[in-house]
Image 1: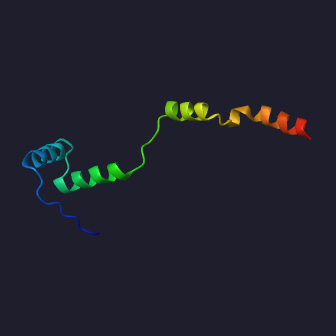
Image 2: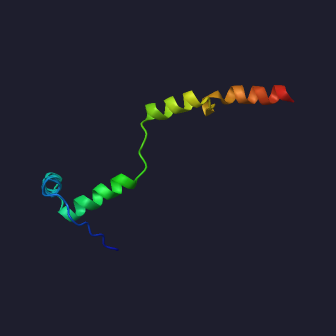
Length: 76
């Protein structure tokens, strides 16, 4: 696995990272890797957020399937 080196880290930042690693029962290396992985992962949306976005966008959902079928049948 490739290495990354960060220079000139302020002492207060390093102390906070070490404290966070200890709290999470991880080595500093594993804590930093976890922070980086979390930073680049897409945010997970809650069910409420997904519902809100679908509602706002005007997209129709599978719960409207009967309506879809009727509209398709009526269009023929």
